[in-house]
Length: 295
Image (cartoon, rainbow, N blue to C red; front, side, top):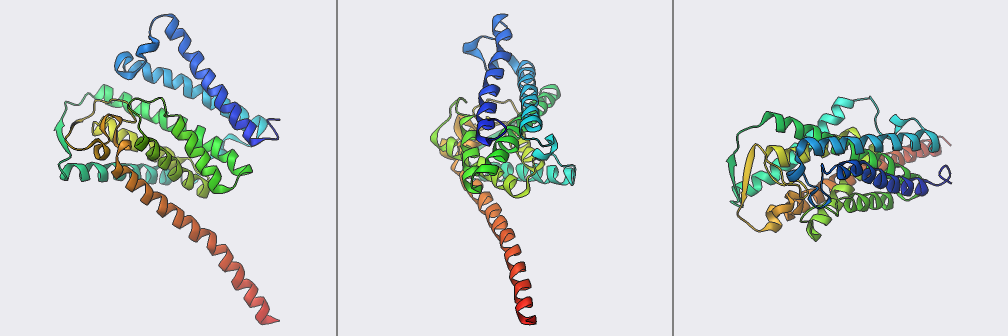
Protein backbone atom coordinates (compact mmCIF):
# COMPACT_ATOMS: atom_id res chain seq x y z
CA UNK A 1 0.00 0.00 0.00
CA UNK A 2 2.81 2.43 0.86
CA UNK A 3 4.47 1.81 -2.51
CA UNK A 4 1.25 2.44 -4.43
CA UNK A 5 -0.18 5.43 -2.56
CA UNK A 6 1.65 8.78 -2.05
CA UNK A 7 -1.12 9.84 0.34
CA UNK A 8 -0.56 6.73 2.47
CA UNK A 9 3.15 7.56 2.67
CA UNK A 10 2.39 11.14 3.74
CA UNK A 11 -0.05 10.04 6.46
CA UNK A 12 2.44 7.42 7.67
CA UNK A 13 5.21 10.02 7.83
CA UNK A 14 3.08 12.51 9.79
CA UNK A 15 1.92 9.90 12.30
CA UNK A 16 5.34 8.32 12.83
CA UNK A 17 7.15 11.67 13.07
CA UNK A 18 4.78 12.80 15.85
CA UNK A 19 5.12 9.48 17.69
CA UNK A 20 8.92 9.56 17.46
CA UNK A 21 9.03 13.20 18.62
CA UNK A 22 7.02 12.19 21.69
CA UNK A 23 9.18 9.13 22.38
CA UNK A 24 12.32 11.28 22.30
CA UNK A 25 10.84 13.47 25.06
CA UNK A 26 9.94 10.57 27.38
CA UNK A 27 13.46 10.06 28.87
CA UNK A 28 13.71 13.81 29.59
CA UNK A 29 10.33 13.77 31.33
CA UNK A 30 11.11 10.54 33.22
CA UNK A 31 14.36 11.96 34.63
CA UNK A 32 12.62 15.26 35.55
CA UNK A 33 15.01 17.14 33.26
CA UNK A 34 11.92 18.63 31.65
CA UNK A 35 8.44 19.07 33.10
CA UNK A 36 5.55 18.62 30.62
CA UNK A 37 3.82 21.80 31.81
CA UNK A 38 7.03 23.86 31.43
CA UNK A 39 8.34 22.61 28.10
CA UNK A 40 9.52 25.86 26.52
CA UNK A 41 12.79 27.50 25.60
CA UNK A 42 12.65 29.98 28.49
CA UNK A 43 12.47 27.17 31.08
CA UNK A 44 14.81 24.53 29.65
CA UNK A 45 17.24 26.82 27.83
CA UNK A 46 18.48 27.01 24.25
CA UNK A 47 21.12 24.25 24.73
CA UNK A 48 18.65 21.52 25.74
CA UNK A 49 16.00 22.70 23.27
CA UNK A 50 18.56 22.49 20.44
CA UNK A 51 19.59 18.98 21.52
CA UNK A 52 15.97 17.75 21.57
CA UNK A 53 15.25 19.35 18.20
CA UNK A 54 18.41 17.81 16.75
CA UNK A 55 17.32 14.33 17.86
CA UNK A 56 13.81 14.84 16.45
CA UNK A 57 15.18 16.19 13.15
CA UNK A 58 17.63 13.27 12.84
CA UNK A 59 14.75 10.82 13.36
CA UNK A 60 12.67 12.63 10.71
CA UNK A 61 15.53 12.60 8.20
CA UNK A 62 16.07 8.86 8.74
CA UNK A 63 12.33 8.19 8.39
CA UNK A 64 12.06 10.25 5.19
CA UNK A 65 15.21 8.59 3.81
CA UNK A 66 13.66 5.15 4.34
CA UNK A 67 10.36 6.16 2.71
CA UNK A 68 12.05 7.87 -0.22
CA UNK A 69 14.49 5.07 -1.03
CA UNK A 70 12.43 1.99 -0.12
CA UNK A 71 8.86 3.02 -1.01
CA UNK A 72 9.19 5.89 -3.49
CA UNK A 73 12.12 4.07 -5.10
CA UNK A 74 14.11 7.27 -5.67
CA UNK A 75 17.41 8.67 -4.37
CA UNK A 76 17.20 10.92 -1.32
CA UNK A 77 18.81 13.90 -3.10
CA UNK A 78 15.90 14.03 -5.57
CA UNK A 79 13.76 15.54 -2.81
CA UNK A 80 15.45 18.85 -3.67
CA UNK A 81 19.08 18.58 -2.64
CA UNK A 82 20.71 18.97 -6.04
CA UNK A 83 24.31 20.24 -5.90
CA UNK A 84 23.74 22.31 -9.04
CA UNK A 85 23.95 26.01 -8.08
CA UNK A 86 23.59 25.04 -4.40
CA UNK A 87 25.25 28.18 -3.03
CA UNK A 88 23.40 30.44 -5.46
CA UNK A 89 19.97 29.04 -4.50
CA UNK A 90 20.74 28.95 -0.78
CA UNK A 91 22.17 32.47 -0.96
CA UNK A 92 19.20 33.83 -2.91
CA UNK A 93 16.71 32.38 -0.42
CA UNK A 94 18.75 33.74 2.50
CA UNK A 95 18.98 37.24 1.01
CA UNK A 96 15.24 37.40 0.26
CA UNK A 97 14.51 36.24 3.82
CA UNK A 98 16.77 38.97 5.25
CA UNK A 99 15.35 41.70 3.01
CA UNK A 100 11.75 40.66 3.77
CA UNK A 101 12.21 40.93 7.54
CA UNK A 102 14.17 44.19 7.26
CA UNK A 103 11.42 45.76 5.13
CA UNK A 104 8.84 44.93 7.82
CA UNK A 105 11.13 46.07 10.64
CA UNK A 106 12.03 49.40 8.99
CA UNK A 107 8.37 50.07 8.15
CA UNK A 108 7.44 49.58 11.81
CA UNK A 109 10.46 51.56 13.05
CA UNK A 110 9.93 54.64 10.88
CA UNK A 111 6.18 54.55 11.58
CA UNK A 112 6.97 54.69 15.34
CA UNK A 113 5.18 51.41 16.01
CA UNK A 114 8.27 50.03 17.77
CA UNK A 115 11.10 51.41 19.89
CA UNK A 116 14.46 49.72 19.47
CA UNK A 117 17.28 49.43 21.99
CA UNK A 118 20.61 47.58 21.77
CA UNK A 119 21.47 44.51 23.88
CA UNK A 120 24.90 43.22 24.86
CA UNK A 121 25.77 40.52 22.35
CA UNK A 122 26.07 37.03 23.85
CA UNK A 123 28.08 35.28 21.13
CA UNK A 124 27.50 31.81 22.62
CA UNK A 125 23.70 32.14 22.63
CA UNK A 126 23.77 33.87 19.25
CA UNK A 127 25.66 30.92 17.72
CA UNK A 128 23.36 28.38 19.38
CA UNK A 129 20.30 30.17 18.01
CA UNK A 130 21.80 30.02 14.51
CA UNK A 131 22.23 26.26 14.90
CA UNK A 132 18.73 25.93 16.36
CA UNK A 133 17.03 27.80 13.51
CA UNK A 134 19.17 25.99 10.92
CA UNK A 135 17.80 22.67 12.23
CA UNK A 136 14.25 24.09 12.25
CA UNK A 137 14.58 25.20 8.61
CA UNK A 138 16.07 21.92 7.35
CA UNK A 139 13.64 19.75 9.32
CA UNK A 140 10.44 21.61 8.36
CA UNK A 141 11.37 22.18 4.70
CA UNK A 142 12.42 18.56 4.19
CA UNK A 143 9.24 17.33 5.86
CA UNK A 144 6.66 19.69 4.33
CA UNK A 145 8.08 20.73 0.98
CA UNK A 146 10.65 18.00 0.26
CA UNK A 147 8.54 14.95 1.05
CA UNK A 148 4.88 15.89 1.61
CA UNK A 149 4.50 18.36 -1.26
CA UNK A 150 6.70 16.24 -3.51
CA UNK A 151 4.38 13.26 -2.99
CA UNK A 152 1.20 15.32 -3.28
CA UNK A 153 2.34 16.59 -6.68
CA UNK A 154 2.42 12.98 -7.91
CA UNK A 155 -1.28 12.40 -7.25
CA UNK A 156 -2.97 15.82 -6.97
CA UNK A 157 -3.35 18.95 -9.07
CA UNK A 158 -0.48 21.42 -8.56
CA UNK A 159 -2.31 24.18 -6.67
CA UNK A 160 -4.33 21.71 -4.60
CA UNK A 161 -1.03 20.09 -3.56
CA UNK A 162 0.49 23.45 -2.61
CA UNK A 163 -2.52 24.46 -0.49
CA UNK A 164 -2.69 21.07 1.29
CA UNK A 165 1.03 21.19 2.14
CA UNK A 166 0.66 24.82 3.30
CA UNK A 167 -2.25 23.80 5.57
CA UNK A 168 -0.11 21.03 7.07
CA UNK A 169 2.71 23.55 7.63
CA UNK A 170 0.24 25.88 9.33
CA UNK A 171 -1.18 23.12 11.56
CA UNK A 172 2.32 22.04 12.64
CA UNK A 173 2.54 25.47 14.34
CA UNK A 174 -0.93 25.33 15.90
CA UNK A 175 0.49 24.52 19.34
CA UNK A 176 2.71 27.62 19.42
CA UNK A 177 2.19 30.31 22.05
CA UNK A 178 -0.18 33.23 21.32
CA UNK A 179 -1.25 31.92 17.92
CA UNK A 180 -4.15 33.86 16.34
CA UNK A 181 -6.29 33.77 13.21
CA UNK A 182 -4.03 36.36 11.58
CA UNK A 183 -0.87 34.39 12.38
CA UNK A 184 -2.54 31.23 11.02
CA UNK A 185 -3.26 33.05 7.75
CA UNK A 186 0.34 34.25 7.51
CA UNK A 187 1.73 30.78 8.23
CA UNK A 188 -0.52 29.50 5.45
CA UNK A 189 0.80 32.20 3.10
CA UNK A 190 4.42 31.33 3.93
CA UNK A 191 3.59 27.72 3.11
CA UNK A 192 2.01 28.74 -0.20
CA UNK A 193 4.97 30.97 -1.13
CA UNK A 194 7.58 28.27 -0.45
CA UNK A 195 5.28 25.65 -2.01
CA UNK A 196 5.00 27.67 -5.22
CA UNK A 197 8.78 27.87 -5.40
CA UNK A 198 9.26 24.14 -4.75
CA UNK A 199 6.57 23.09 -7.26
CA UNK A 200 8.27 25.21 -9.92
CA UNK A 201 11.93 24.38 -9.26
CA UNK A 202 11.94 21.13 -7.17
CA UNK A 203 14.64 22.71 -5.02
CA UNK A 204 14.94 22.84 -1.20
CA UNK A 205 17.98 25.10 -0.88
CA UNK A 206 16.04 28.31 -1.53
CA UNK A 207 13.24 27.47 0.99
CA UNK A 208 15.81 26.43 3.62
CA UNK A 209 17.75 29.68 3.16
CA UNK A 210 14.60 31.81 3.30
CA UNK A 211 13.20 29.94 6.33
CA UNK A 212 16.48 30.19 8.24
CA UNK A 213 17.16 33.90 7.73
CA UNK A 214 13.48 34.84 8.17
CA UNK A 215 13.52 33.28 11.66
CA UNK A 216 17.08 34.24 12.58
CA UNK A 217 16.74 37.89 11.57
CA UNK A 218 13.38 38.14 13.31
CA UNK A 219 14.53 36.63 16.63
CA UNK A 220 18.26 36.52 17.51
CA UNK A 221 19.09 39.64 15.46
CA UNK A 222 16.10 42.00 15.84
CA UNK A 223 14.65 40.60 19.07
CA UNK A 224 11.07 39.84 18.00
CA UNK A 225 9.35 36.61 19.11
CA UNK A 226 9.51 33.91 16.43
CA UNK A 227 6.12 32.23 15.91
CA UNK A 228 5.31 32.66 19.58
CA UNK A 229 8.82 31.74 20.76
CA UNK A 230 10.34 34.55 22.87
CA UNK A 231 13.93 35.25 21.83
CA UNK A 232 16.59 37.49 23.34
CA UNK A 233 18.18 39.21 20.37
CA UNK A 234 20.94 41.67 19.61
CA UNK A 235 18.20 44.30 19.69
CA UNK A 236 15.17 44.66 21.94
CA UNK A 237 11.85 45.87 20.60
CA UNK A 238 9.29 47.75 22.66
CA UNK A 239 5.97 47.48 20.83
CA UNK A 240 4.15 50.80 20.71
CA UNK A 241 1.44 50.10 18.17
CA UNK A 242 -1.42 47.73 17.43
CA UNK A 243 -0.52 44.04 17.72
CA UNK A 244 -2.11 43.47 14.30
CA UNK A 245 0.72 45.58 12.85
CA UNK A 246 3.60 44.67 15.16
CA UNK A 247 2.61 41.01 15.53
CA UNK A 248 2.44 41.27 19.31
CA UNK A 249 3.75 38.37 21.38
CA UNK A 250 3.55 35.95 18.43
CA UNK A 251 6.10 37.85 16.35
CA UNK A 252 5.96 39.46 12.95
CA UNK A 253 3.96 36.55 11.50
CA UNK A 254 1.01 38.01 13.43
CA UNK A 255 1.13 41.26 11.43
CA UNK A 256 -0.94 42.58 8.53
CA UNK A 257 2.31 44.00 7.11
CA UNK A 258 3.70 40.48 6.78
CA UNK A 259 0.42 39.36 5.20
CA UNK A 260 0.77 42.08 2.55
CA UNK A 261 4.40 41.18 1.88
CA UNK A 262 3.66 37.45 1.58
CA UNK A 263 0.74 38.04 -0.80
CA UNK A 264 3.12 40.11 -2.97
CA UNK A 265 5.80 37.38 -2.90
CA UNK A 266 3.21 34.73 -3.79
CA UNK A 267 1.92 36.87 -6.67
CA UNK A 268 5.47 37.36 -8.04
CA UNK A 269 6.20 33.62 -7.94
CA UNK A 270 2.81 32.70 -9.40
CA UNK A 271 3.27 35.20 -12.23
CA UNK A 272 6.77 33.92 -12.95
CA UNK A 273 5.57 30.32 -13.02
CA UNK A 274 2.58 31.25 -15.21
CA UNK A 275 4.86 32.93 -17.78
CA UNK A 276 7.24 29.96 -17.69
CA UNK A 277 4.39 27.55 -18.45
CA UNK A 278 3.29 29.68 -21.41
CA UNK A 279 6.71 29.66 -23.10
CA UNK A 280 6.64 25.99 -24.20
CA UNK A 281 3.14 26.50 -25.64
CA UNK A 282 4.36 29.49 -27.68
CA UNK A 283 7.39 27.51 -28.81
CA UNK A 284 5.21 24.60 -30.00
CA UNK A 285 2.89 27.02 -31.81
CA UNK A 286 5.84 28.55 -33.70
CA UNK A 287 7.02 25.09 -34.79
CA UNK A 288 3.48 24.15 -35.88
CA UNK A 289 3.12 27.40 -37.86
CA UNK A 290 6.45 26.79 -39.63
CA UNK A 291 5.33 23.26 -40.55
CA UNK A 292 2.01 24.59 -41.92
CA UNK A 293 3.83 27.26 -43.96
CA UNK A 294 6.16 24.63 -45.47
CA UNK A 295 3.16 22.54 -46.48
